[in-house]
Length: 168
Image (cartoon, rainbow, N blue to C red; front, top):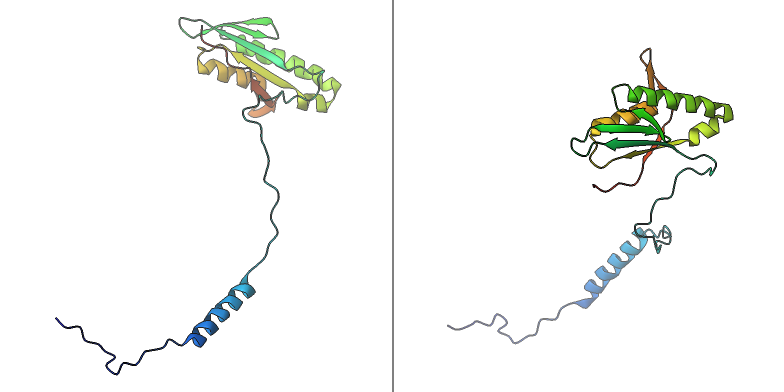
């Protein structure tokens, strides 16, 4: 098979460079004019600590959190003892009502110190590992407030949990 030479006269075809250079310069000018130069947003070269323990969110050292301790029966996971600041509240169906009453008394004592003390007050809930969740929810509800005539009366809004106790 013979390959035909299309340029039979032996002339060399020259590529015109002037139009290509013109197009390149026009594109360069176009991109330079449409470029929006913005300042960098900031220095993001920040070294953050990894897994640092959270410090207490209460800023007033004179205001320790109310402590609610809930002990569980190891065999069943049922509530065996409810304690508020070391005082036993029992383990029956009225234990959370007694807890709510003690929180109410403590909140009323704090109101005399001023509204800023009440806003800073926290409750620390310390449940056993195997405790049923319904008991934890009841403790949160008892510490948060009480329903009066269909309206929620808020006692404390800052509730935190103690570090997890390992299963025995």
